[in-house]
Length: 263
Image (cartoon, rainbow, N blue to C red; front, side):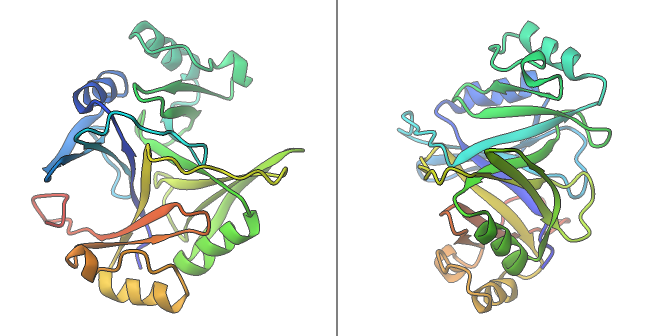
């Protein structure tokens, strides 16, 4: 199993508005799109993509204007150079992005903005990766031990960082041997025992695999949830779920294919 995080999917109410927002403010370009029956999927990302870099998938469903954000979904984080956090935030403000959490309010360590649908986007300082490339996707979990065990046992991910406070902890996981430019999963665990609502505004994480059927069978041997197997997805992709119900897609990538979609 390759295990690289291929993309993170969010749902949007107005596709053209979202395409314009990400294109204008984060300099993302459209990489590919698929027009389905009642829905459209668009892959976006920086012009220069690292081979292990993650895409952003925007999904728009016809009539899907009323999206429930939920609180189990946290945010995506995008990178800016170490010395450009304030400058980058000011650039977004000048471009008309709403002021949400500026660098000063976050101890000048990071900042946050929101896209047109209210998806939170963290801005983090990194000395690697293209500006605005995706650094990590944060999801909230109800049992940290169970969540860490899931990613380690099912996908062979390893913990690459953690930050613990008096009330919560953040754990970062990636495939073993992943590059710095690869997207991580941030697992946020609050110590107070709260539960979360998944909502429908966030869709899934996607893991790139070497062989869809072989890797799916391996996941089943490791007791992953049999949610949508390859056969039910026309042998093009598959889905499992983590212990908190977050959906995880499995997909093969042919680097020589004309389309990013396995259709």
